[in-house]
Amino acid sequence: MDALYGSESSLMDSLTTQPGFTVYRNTVLKGSTDALLANFPTVERLVGTDWLRSAVAIYARLSPPTDARLLHYGTDFPRFLDEFEPAREMPYLGGVARLDLLWTHVHCAIDEPGLELSDLSQFTETELGNLWLTPRAAAGWLWLPDCPAYTIWRVNREQLEMPEELEWQGEGALLTRKAGRVHWQPASAADCAFLDACTAHLPLDLAADKAIEAEPDLNLENLIIRLVSADAFVSMDLGLSS
Amino acid sequence: MGHTPIMNKPFQIGAGLGLKPNHYEDALECTVEGLWFEVHPENYMVGGGPRLAWLEAIGERYPLSLHGVSLSLAADCPPDEEHLKRLKMLADRVQPALISEHLAWSTWRGKYHPDLLPFPRTGEALQRIAGNIQRTQDILGRRIAIENPTHYLHFDGHDYSELDFLTELSRRTGCGLLLDVNNVHISAHNLGFDASTYLDAFPAKAIMEIHLAGFAEDPGNSTLLIDTHDAPIAEDVWSLYRRLIERIGLRPTLIERDDHIPDFDVLLAERNRAQTVLNLGQNQRLQVAI
Image (tube, rainbow over all chains, first blue to last red; front, side):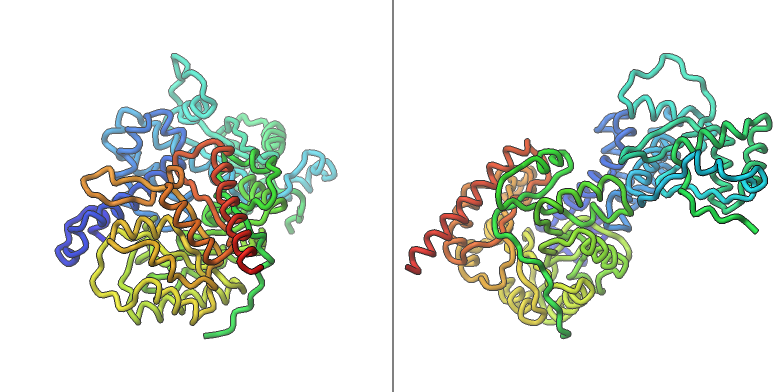
């Protein structure tokens, strides 16, 4: 197997010295690298196909796929990019790759009916505080604290021109799926903290506390309207917490 | 070996196409009679979303075939249980007319190596692979077809010819065979045997499906041909296919194209050519019978 990834192996000389062995070696590598190119289209647009092909060839030798579903291949590729010396000048690249992964996750997640704002109107304020809101599987969010990776991702994903000046600050993103298409919007640190708390099965009032910790002057009502309108939550099997 | 129920719905015999996402709209709008589509199930083992909805929409209009590339039936261990469960779930969902896999391996010690890798055809391998096929058929509750792979290596230590190996697998497990004519053409060139002789001896009754595809010359220094699926079907392969159909009659025939994918109409023209071969072969057999 090492020989398949380019290491020498005298044990298999009768096979590895045949030109046909190189065909298998090339095909295995091509299968992995093609999958990674497909899974990180925004990274490809940023760095170009040749640069990315070189990077993923190194990564593929270090981390062959562990899952035959190649659309999931590359879950630790963002971390590889974080530490990849030739990417040192692009500190946002790992974040952009994380958003590409998130896009695939949202695109392929199970179908669930989304919560509507009108679903919440039936509850009193006290009942609302005790509600458990469950984020949809087809909702993904990410807070990237170090750089405007979301803006860079979005501009490239939408194939727009990069603005001449970027505000160099942390950003978050919320990706959801509506009518079969993946949508994205900026997410605040409070949005992400609230969604994280909901994922951890905290009731709404405790999730709100987490959001306020992240953003002390938070307008909670706006946050809930924003996230519910984005189709971030599963529709009502709304058990009340005891 | 246990009994495997055969629950395939009747397969509409004809020529079909490998389905690519960029041909989704074309496929849905196409009105060619007898058309069917094949996909790699690994690309649709997802929880939900548009990818799966798209496949279901195609499946409502045409017969579907799931052609796996990663079950790794020739590996030194049974097929991955989770993978088999996912295949079963997908099959239950889209009710394919056919499910197929390869006589090859691709997983080892938890890693997936995306290719169809060779192995020595020994008695031990036969027993192991028959068990893996049987396990797969038992879980799916249906017969599958096993494809002859492309060969690039001269292997010492084969106890069986490929034909004898496939025939014995079919006999032991009840599985069908998927005969890839392009693979035979390439392997014959690469290993130095006669493709027509191989095809003439291929067990006709077991053939559930035929594959046709294009190939390329090795861009390296060798004289090998490579199964790239990135070009039109070669005339030599069409000749082998015509000869095969004249011998065995109609079989579902798939045009495979996985790279340098042209417009849908270009692929459809190749598919129609295969359909013409099938029609002519059928007419000739009818005339002989009369």
